[in-house]
View 1 (tube, rainbow, N blue to C red):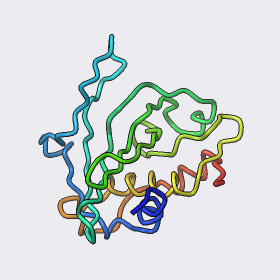
View 2: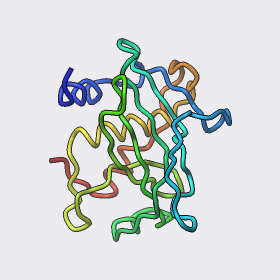
View 3: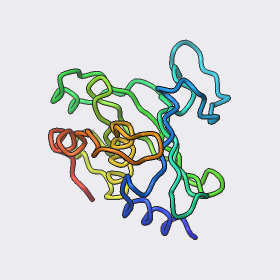
View 4: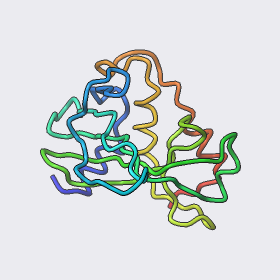
Length: 167
């Protein structure tokens, strides 16, 4: 399976297709820590806090939550809290095959794809769907095993308020 096909599979999936493992609330490690060390507090969360396995093919997985650094942009003033940070979502197919960034906004209330520029705020359809999926995972009340109530994610509302465009 090629990378484009893998991205398409993820974009067309929904939260019910995934077995989600919450490493944040359990306090258990994700076993995906970064060996990278930075000066000061630039890299304050060096481990992913969530993992998910694609149920039809368990060699496919996602990991997210590693915080990179603070994020600043004019469009953040549309939210209650104008501070944000960059995070990473990693895609696995037996090994790490892709990585995307996203922005954690409004004191962690939502994740949004990082736009290409502040002026135009354009994101790809794949990036939007990927970040929406992990946002839903984090707000999913049935996080153990990925089966439960509908997600409490407000992704679509935050996406609309940020006035993003899909390319």
